[in-house]
Image 1 (spheres, rainbow, N blue to C red):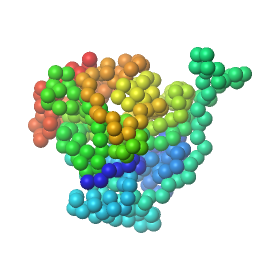
Image 2: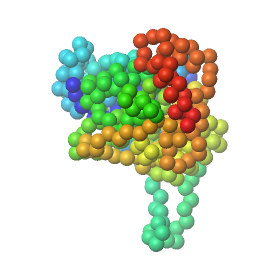
Image 3: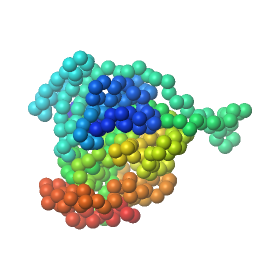
Image 4: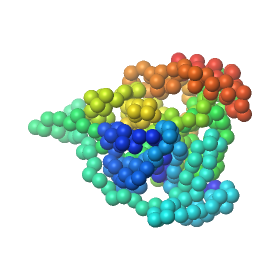
Length: 345
């Protein structure tokens, strides 16, 4: 229907905004505003706040917002989906179309939302490479301090209706696939994970803006935020560790997307990622295909943890598996067993 150009922001609910703000500052966000029951967080790059957190009874992901290139895209999208273009806020410029994807996540497409000005960024370190000595008489002393988040990169979702959700993001928002993962021995049944990017034609875009995989739940998996370089990831991670937060997995380098990564849990156990040096693709790059496996998630780094994979059994997980096998989902017993095997390989 249209081609969205990027993620605009993510929306969450949390019961304790004060605690959410403390973690946000430690992780490297700047507070754009705190008004009443809404906390807005931003990075150093110009743009709108990349996280909107509203007070709610539980900690949960609400959904993503995407940028439309033109107002006409909003009109076309609203007409095709039976929705309406409305003002973004009573006292705020911009317009929005509110949708819901097949997994049940609230999806917004916005246009005309004003940008916040750029903030001072974290300086990338000058590095010496072999015989190329660019740093002379100048020791490296990166501070053990919060990384400075630059921008929102991507969100990863789990869905019971993977094929329907994949088609919706391709057809409704005009996204294109960078990589597909399939269960070993089941490529003929199609992918079970997709990494989707925005189609900007010859203008490069992040390897993935949305990634999704088949599973027993419709849930948020993690979101990722760009920082300057590896030292920003590592020094920022040491600061988070000193502050008592829990590293979920890292530091390493992914295969699909190539990002340097480091994953953390916030106080409500929602997973967030610092990343740097991710792949940028234009529309000429065809999708890659690879078998899904735990060992295939990183080129190097520590072994992937059960926490990252969400593979720790719990009563909630068993209930979700039971309902997924009974309900109108794309998960059957054979695929479930294959998923469990792939995530332990």
